[in-house]
Amino acid sequence: MAKTKDIKANSGEKVRSPWRIAWMRLKRHKLAMISAYILIVMYLSVIFAGFLSPYHMHTTQRNNYLQPPSKIYWKDENGKLSRPYVYAMKMSDPMTQEYQEIRDKKFYVRLFTRSDDPRNTWDLLGIKSNIHLYGARADDGEEGLIFIMGSDDYGRDYFTRVLYGGRASLFVGWAGILITLTIGMLFGGISGYYGGWIDNIMMRVAEIIMSIPSFYLLLALAAVLPRDISSTMRYFMIVSILSFISWAGMARIIRGMVLSIRTREYVQAARAIGSSDMRIITKHILPNTLSFVIVSATLSIPGYILGESGLSFLGLGIQEPDASWGNMLSSAMNLQTLAKSPWNLLAGVFIFAAVLCYNLFGDGLRDAFDPRSKL
Image 1 (cartoon, rainbow, N blue to C red):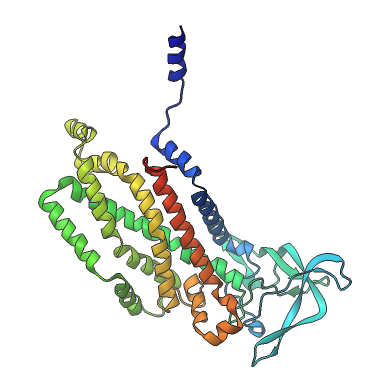
Image 2: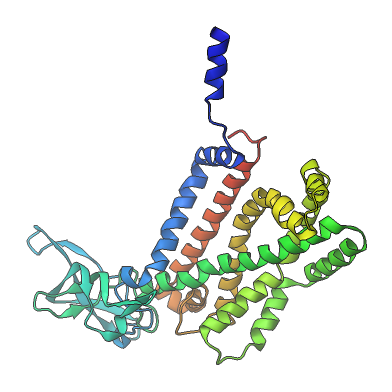
């Protein structure tokens, strides 16, 4: 009877799929999970940039260029707790670019404010609004300026441009890796499945692509793009260039995996029942490479972020007045400006954080899918 109960108990246990096991192992990787949460916050922030930021990325305040971050006060003149407020600031010396506060009026920090400036209207999926998470306004209704990260050399809110610029810099990786994976998996899958002269020709093509110096190709192709094309078109051109030089390496690795998978029994069984070659490749072989593909894609996205940022930094990517983290860093090339406004380096901090989080998360995924790891 005891044996019968044990058998029933064991038969009632849920069988854990490899994906569930990988998820449970990933959750034990603290650095990977923290990195994933940070990335989620980053992506949500840039998606809702219009609401989270007090201005639009093109809104300029010509008299407030390179203004330092606004100081938020929590106590009044008597030292008592008060609603948070800021003072208006005015440049006192154009030579030294020093600012001083104008203390004749307080501009209180308010949540869910409606901007009076029509330039600050934002649009998300067809929804237009001028309501922002925060802003500054005096008791008499006058709207004030609040720059929590300072302003750039055109008087635009730096925090606003960090959020809007993150759209280009963060999503370039997802767009690029989608193209790279599609081409690389199909190319490598067909090459590995058929083998022989087809494999030889396809791999030689991949090796030719891999032999092209990627950085110089980026510079050359980006330089010949017309200067008057829109930032959207330029963005898609950058994605295409980055994907073109990245798919060949993926294809070679997929080809090696397919050479091993094609000899397994379930593939032979699919052939025996008359499945077409393309169905066998897409339904039976390539899905078994997904664990590697997911890890590889995660670790490849930082390369796209750095590639787009590098091109924009050199003036060959996203152009002003549109924002990306790369072209925001270009103002840091001027040492004199950087010495007086070090907050212009903050875009580089966000690039570093995004790349680091992707690498840590990718390492966690790799360990989670590796049964030999000690997670």
